[in-house]
Image (cartoon, rainbow, N blue to C red; front, side, top):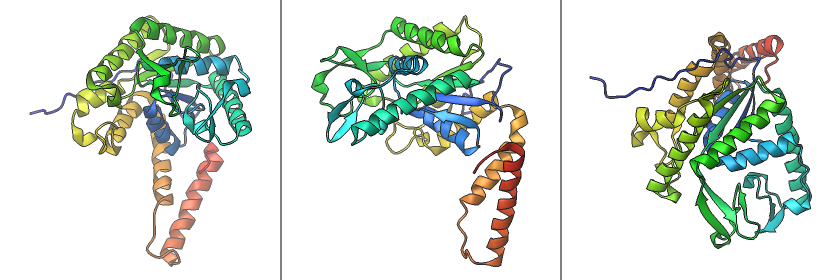
Amino acid sequence: MDFRTQILVKNTSKNKIDYTSKILLLGSCFTENIGNKLDYFKFKNTINPFGILFHPKAIENEISNAINQKKYTENDVFFHNERWHCFDVHSKLSNSSKEDLLLNLNTAVKIANTQLHQSTHLIITLGTAWVYRYIESDKIVANCHKIPQKKFLKEILSVDEIVANLERIICLIKSVNPKIELIFTVSPIRHLKDGFIENTQSKSHLNTAIHQVIASRNNTHYFPSYEIMMDDLRDYRFYKNDMIHPNKTAIEYIWSQFKHTWIDEKSNDLMTQIDTIQKGLSHKPFNENSIQHQKFIENLHLKINKLQDEYQIRF
């Protein structure tokens, strides 16, 4: 008897990811889960130059800024709680120095611009359709930076609004990189601070909009990370203690589905070699000075040097 409803994940693209690919990942927290796995296996990827972006309007805004090479100035930043912030980006870019924040913002623009022009694959993870509008400027922000909630209006993007965001995103990217493969996904992380019903409504808007947009386009795809979590794993044992974020087991399983669907099989042998080296690098010996451990380290460095010489992979 089968106690699971395993999802058959399809990919009709002929342009799968291998070690010649350049991958840019933008969006919600789950973007970083997949990006960290690509990092582990030493693929050429860039993760969220602007930090985590939860909703499609924020992602569109930063893609537009990157392509148009926006120059951030002091008019784009503000001081709050002893730090300088920017409403366009995540708080990880915030800084105690205004000059350093502006430097980081403009560096992020340059990195994103380069990657949008050069990447072979772009993975965009949408986290929520709920947004916050700053009352003073009447603009939707990417992050509230812990400013009191009374200064914002909370609203949900309609399916039509998200469709418009995604269409503009695709047009912007294709204008500078027409052959790029776009992979959209909906984050499996539950935004329960919005409420259970509100979270479902939000994910539904995102999912409907994505499928409406990709239906008639080439090189534009959907990866069902949300459905794998909700309908295949479907159990609280696959969540962290907060019962909101997928745990390590869930991330590994979703990654295995992504690997099977999107990573070229020809890369498997190299991935296995890199995995062996990564595990060796994290190994903690009982005796660092033992002959056995020194021999282990010597063999490990030989493997690393071999991959560096053959594939220019750096550890």
